[in-house]
Amino acid sequence: MIKVASSEEFKRLIEALAHDVESANIHWRLYVGVHAAIGESHCVYEQSATFWHLTFNAHTFAALQFLSRAFDQEQKSLHLLSWLKTIESNLHLFEPEEFKKRLAGNPFAESLAEHPRAPDKDQLKADIALCMATDPDVNLLVRHRNSIGAHRSARAAVTGLAPDGLSIEVLERLLDRGHAILNRYSSLFAASTYSRQMIGHDDYRYVVSSVAQAVERSRSLHGDG
Image (cartoon, rainbow, N blue to C red):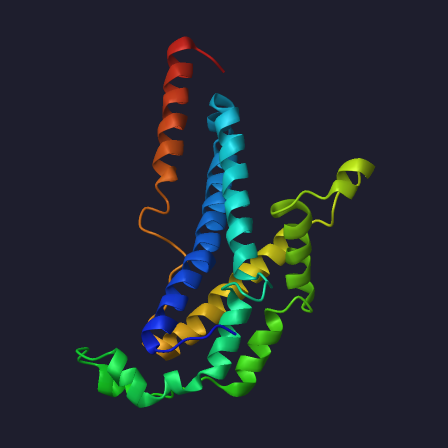
C-alpha cells in the first residue's frame, strides 16, 4: 500500500502507473503491427535487415520492461499490486462527494456522480490476486524479469540453459489484464480511461509502403525478377 493524503496524490499515482501500462501496450502493438506489415512486404526487411532486427528487439524489450514494472512486486514501488492495495485502504476517495469535487467545473459531474463510483470489493480482491506473484502468469513475468529483463542469470550463463521463457500468449494476457484493471478504477475515480494506441500509431505503414514501391520501381527499371 502507498500512503496518499488526497485525491490529487492518488491522481498522480494513476498517471504514473498509466504511463507504464499503456507504454507496454503501445510498444507491443507497434511490434505486432510492424512485424505483420513487413511480413506482407518481405523485400522491405531485406533492404535494411539490421535496422528492422534492432527495431523489433527494441519494441519487445520496451514492452517487457514496462509490463514488468507494472506487475512488479517490490513493496516500496508503484505498480498495479501496490496501487490496488492503496485503493482498498482509501475507498473514501471514491465517494460521490469526493468525485464531484474532482470534477468541479465539468458540466456532467452531477450526472456522472449518480452512477456507482465505489469499487466492488469482491472485484477488487480478485484483481489484487491477479497482480500477485502467486498468479501463474505474473509469476512467469517476474521470473523472466529477474533472470533476463532486469538481471542476467549467472547460472543460466554458466550452464548454457535458457531461463524459463515467457510465451506470447502469457504476455498478451498480462497486457490485456493490466489495461483492464487500470481503466476499471480510473473510470470509477475520474470517469476517464486510457487508450492502448497513440496518435500516429500506424505511421509505419507509410514507411513500409514507400520502401516497397521504391523496390518495385527499381526492379522494373533494371528488369529484376
